[in-house]
Image 1 (tube, helix red, strand yellow):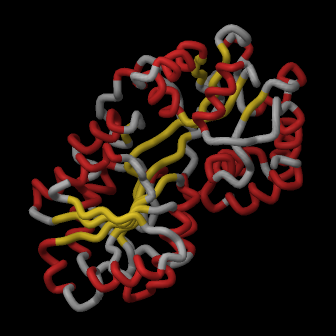
Image 2: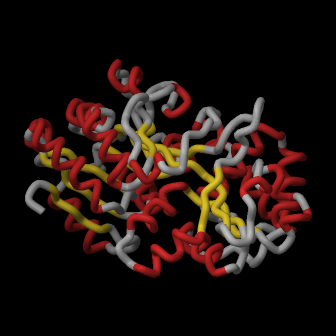
Length: 352
C-alpha cells in the first residue's frame, strides 16, 4: 500500500500502544492539520482501501488506520483520553455507535452535505455520527425445505410450524441485540420477551457461529431458516470457491415484514463520526463528506455488497437480484439505545 498506513491493534499490547503513541502523539499535530488523518476502524474489509485512497487522491491528506474490533477501539479511545491521536471512528452497527456516543467520544458535525445526503433516521440528530452504508437483517431459507410463501414476519417465527427449524447468532452478538432492540421499540418489553421465548423454543440448535455459518447450516439442512445480514449471501454468490457457490445455490433470501401496513425489514448501518480528541477536525469532516460522494457510495454498494445510504445510488447487481424491499425506518439511535435492555430480555428468554 502506498497511501495508507495500516496498523492492527491487539488488546493488551502495550508495545503497540507505545509505538503508536510515539508516531501519532501530540507533538507532530501541526503537521497533521494539513497532511494526515488518523482513522480507527472496525471495518475489516480490504476493499475499503479504495475509498480511503480516493480521499487521498482528492485532498492530498494521507489516511493512517488502526484496525481492531469496535469494543477494543472504543476502550482504547477512552483510555487515551484527550491525548488520543484518533480523528475518526468508523464501525458497524448502530449499537456500537450509540455506545461510543454514550461514552462521550464524538463531537458534533454540522455539515449541510452530510445532513442532506444521509436520511435522518440513519444519522444522529446532533451530528455525532452518520450512517454510510446499510445492511438488511433478512431470512435465509433452504430452497428444498421451505416454500417462501410460508415466510412472512419476524413475529411469525414463534409459530410452532418453525419448531426445530430456526438458526441465529448468539444473544451477545450486536446484530441480534439491535434486531431485538427494534422489536422492543415496536412491540414493548412484555411482547418482545414473549416473542424471544417463542423464537428460542423453535431453535434448531444452540446459537453459534457468524452469519456465514448460519447460511452454511441452512444449506446443510441443520435448520431451515436463519436470520443473517443480506451481504453475506451476496458474498458467497460472488465467491470463486465452488463450495461457497454450492451453498449460495441452496439458499434463498426473504425480506420480512413486507405486507401491507407492515413496518418493513430491519436495517442496520455502518457509520462513524469525528472524535472529541480530533486535532484535524476540518479534514475529518472532509473525510466523512467524501464517504457520501457518488463514487464512495457506489463503492460501498459493490465493495462489500452493502446498500448505499444516499438515495439514487445504483445498487450492486447481485443485491439488486434479490429485489427491492421496504425498510423499517426506525431511528438507528433508538434500537442502538435499546441494546442493553434487549440483551436482558434475551437472557431471560434463554437465548444463549
